[in-house]
Length: 440
Image (cartoon, rainbow, N blue to C red; front, side, top):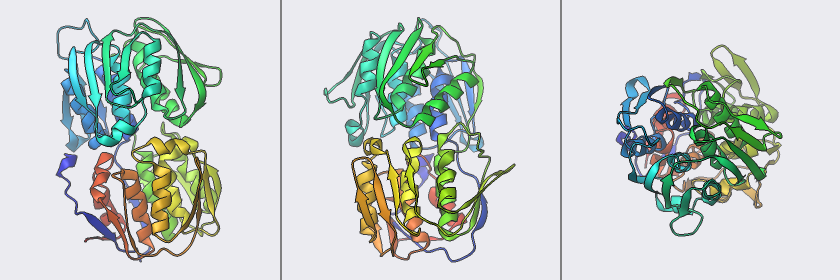
């Protein structure tokens, strides 16, 4: 279990002084694992292979169990099986009443909120204090348009969420997805099982579009159809579809791979991430294109993707589509020649923390010049000074900031245990492939 990982209050990173030349395996994709578990729950029985064991996936499993599914974990084989065992299939959701705790997992609360609209009963979803600050109002508004009684309990547009569900009828819905693409993904995962066809129209900008492509690819892989029109502004979803189950293979996590690709860029070494391809369902594989623009050499081979570190120069890049890797690139930019500007990423202020503000604050703590706007950040490279950096209980802040210590002594990462959210074994892998970490 991820809870078995015990970490000190802080870890000091020892700079890497050797020649980096490694092939690494990263755990399964969190985004795919949680999507696949929702679809698995809509089948009689389905096994996920290559599934990720982490805090986010474990809260999804706990919620499915509380809702009446039998979930069997075989983490030694990276497998999770979801099975419908109750005899009453009149409702898509086995239990008619449930209180669910989602931690700080955005995918869990947003996907389950949409899925629970298929049921018949009373459901409440809540999480940690930060979750009560994360938006879900646009999804609730969409569900309301479809006749679902779904509301923010405190009327803040954020969790806790309360649903009085009486089945999902289908129809027409307009939804905003400028704060999170997960609102649209949640609807797309649920609507194939609605009682009638649905037409979903996107109003306003759509952020993190590759995550919608991931959702669509997974649906099609499961034999479920969605027709995309108007250049991705309209989605026609036939209702009354069925997923027969079987198995779903989960790819290695492209977001987690970014830290190892970054290690190659920062140290001038070579890192191959196994079993990750350019054809990945995950948009974050495009992170390697940013590294290529900064001067690295990207090599795609049968084994996976390899980054060859080269002298780095700053770039100006729109990272809206791959925003989970903004912090990774922000730390790499510290070691480049010339400034790097990352644009069109204002929506990451609504993630596990306000990631733009947090990144700017911690890079300044390390002595780096930073300019921050509402939706962009510019990093001016310079010498890193020793500091203990805050992680804001955000897994991606911890893993990204650790990279600064690969070349600069005295970088200490506070609350390193927050990586359990998506990558519980990160520090073990860091020790294995990079430099030792010393408890402080």
